Length: 255
Image 1 (cartoon, helix red, strand yellow):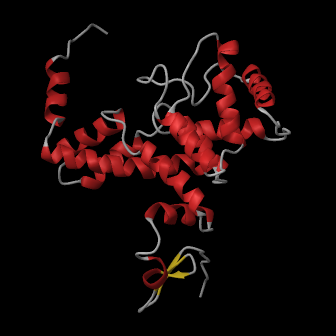
Image 2: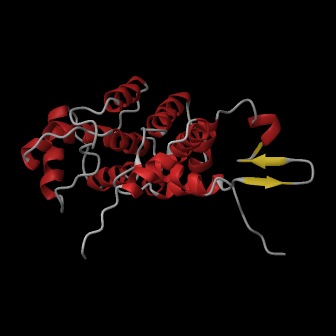
Image 3: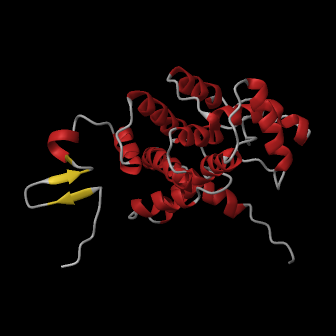
């Protein structure tokens, strides 16, 4: 018989094992969901400090109001209330370069910028690296800079940086991101805030998680937020009003 190796979950008639642990005896009631999500990807159990930073990221990304992802989920639920999974999927499919995907884009940008570089010893050194990175960027669009709502400061950014610092996990990705926040005006000619999705990407990269999977963690967090949005749509629906507002105000124009 062929063999299909896995380090994740296996089952027999009387036992379920996950990550080499007995699911019922070793994990249920003893491991939090955030800790387990980290463990499933990294294949190592996170430290308490890593768990705190990781779960702070999940909380930061769970919900941000009537974003396109939330609206898409609510309108899909309006159209197909028999398909909760479809409504959740519709919201998750909107996690791209403008919403949610910035987490991965920023983490990847920082990771690539750090490759092959000697890490500075002080803030001035990080500022110099940030200036070099910004001047060498192929585009003036820097992932993690700017926010459509928080024009001065994203309230999540200083809090998450502070948590990482408290836990001794303010690594090179966060240090470079902070430096970009200090010096980018010299290169771009305008002052922009470091957005929450970007700082989440930097924090996740500093935890050693694969930058190619960072969008998945953003989607994991947003799945909880979307479920909350759909629960509220059931309690206090706005989907029909949103649809009718657009439909009744549609104006034909010659192509």
